[in-house]
Image 1 (cartoon, rainbow, N blue to C red):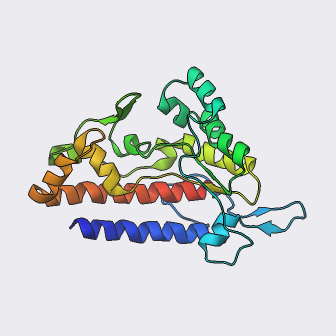
Image 2 (image 1 turned 45 degrees about the horizontal axis):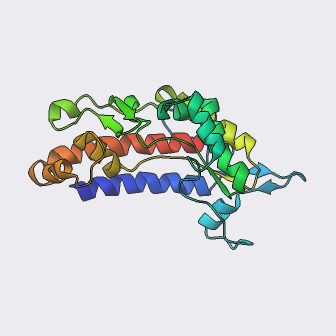
Image 3 (image 1 turned 135 degrees about the vertical axis):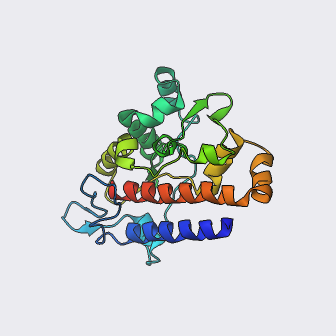
Length: 244
């Protein structure tokens, strides 16, 4: 049953990737969108349409060189980021205040001029929009009230990203305007199983005993959690594409 849920998510997420690689097909992505889609192509100084190198490579086109992007571009290795953390000490401040998230996202791009500029965010950011609250302890990491019964799962609902995460849309649109036309703006989501580990375990874990136990003893319950997450994350991914 878990495999079926993953297939459902894969179909929706592959659709999102297809839309990302086909800039013309952006008339209507998400049923919950309340804003006009952000154009996925840009123009250079001569007015010619330019798709980012990373996007062209993802489509399988022949490119002039291999695009460069690094995981964990932003963070503590950058002096400007460490200075910013003094003013905005919590991760949620840095990721949920649009102008701060934009600044953190741009810092490594300014320094290294990578072909992708990724939104500074967290995989748990959309959870409140699904009815699941969380906090980020600066020492422990993300903390969630464990979800291990059907009563817990019934509190979940489909996300409306425009209501739950308007700051994400604002940050992505600003980034699209700030970076050069040949730079891809990368969104940020977590896949259902990764999110489910936090929901079931309550925090990060080395052994993931609770979710493994649920998979064997309550597979239908885990399937329900994964399906709820898959439906909402698909909406959230499309929402990000619409916004740049």
